[in-house]
Amino acid sequence: QKEVEQNSGPLSVPEGAIASLNCTYSDRGSQSFFWYRQYSGKSPELIMFIYSNGDKEDGRFTAQLNKASQYVSLLIRDSQPSDSATYLCAVNSNTGGFKTIFGAGTRLFVKA
Amino acid sequence: GAVVSQHPSWVICKSGTSVKIECRSLDFQATTMFWYRQFPKQSLMLMATSNEGSKATYEQGVEKDKFLINHASLTLSTLTVTSAHPEDSSFYICSATIRTGGEQFFGPGTRLTVL
Image (tube, rainbow over all chains, first blue to last red; front, top):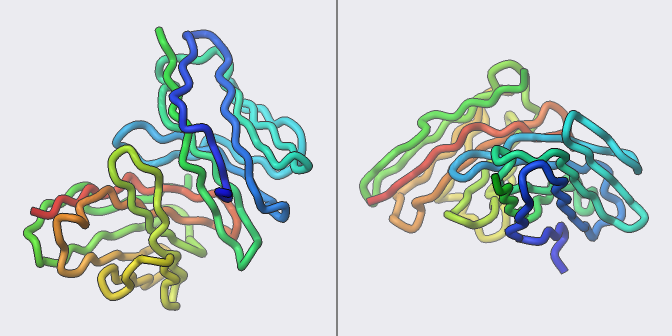
């Protein structure tokens, strides 16, 4: 089982719709969770981080964390073609020392 | 804030030569810097974790004698690819954290092509 798992996609949504990206993790001791966006040919950029159970909103983005179920999700409201990118979920694991584990990413395609 | 730079942004070199890539945190002191490699259409692969003044911790399968990392200060880490070969051609990305376990801020990456 992969430590951080994401559906590779591509996830295709029409412009204006809500895009829902999901991520599951295996280490129950994980404390910090991050979402990064990576455009093709570019390096990742931080979108959001979340530490506590529940929802965290920032503009069109909402991160949701459920530690009991070991999943974290990212919702993008009013999706725009410019949101088309690969979204990486990252989890800080305490197992064997502090380490950030990245998922393989989900490709999102927003159709105009 | 939290800007990380990398230099060069791209480099082409001949097989057998060495290439040095610099990673700098411009407006903060980084407790830890990371080096990643990414092949086309593949996910990020962590190569090593670097702390100022100490030896880097390399991931399994990464040759420490081939990928030399020097972390000279809290704002500068360098990766040297020694005796580069065409299979080393890749996108090398560094990142830095302000605090242990915190978010990582990524540099823009260095595209290496070995002929």
